[in-house]
Image 1 (cartoon, rainbow, N blue to C red):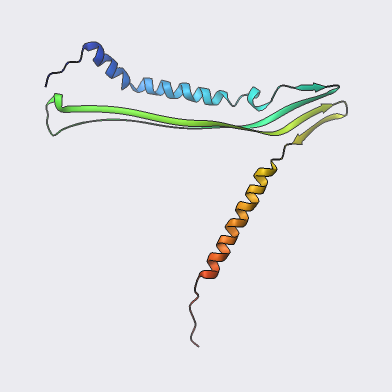
Image 2 (image 1 turned 135 degrees about the horizontal axis):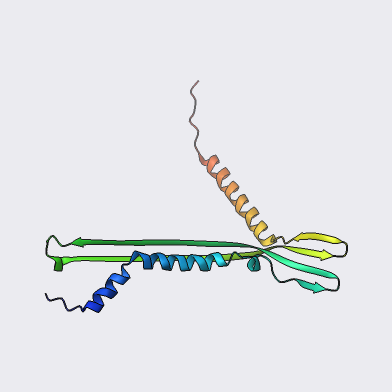
Length: 149
């Protein structure tokens, strides 16, 4: 079978398998994720009300994962036309943020008011109780061996 690829196509194919290009893509993506964890993301703009200033603060979490791979092989022949190679990669991530406190600056002083997520606490309690009930039920179902005396 004849090879109909042009020199420019071969150059493009080699560019796709270039590990530096893959690393550059990963670096660019990581820079975007890490830029989410800056001061502007953690502390919101100050809000003034009379002599009181309130600064909201948040917890920011960046999660990312990547994978890259490449390989080559032949179809049982030393003929260069029957060899192949390929590569690929993938990744994903997410940035999570939630408010955690408000910094209140007033003429009487500075104080930090925590923001409590009651829904998260209630869900944690019900999850713990469900786990405990499940374990107690499972432990009661275990048949203990009878001892002959």
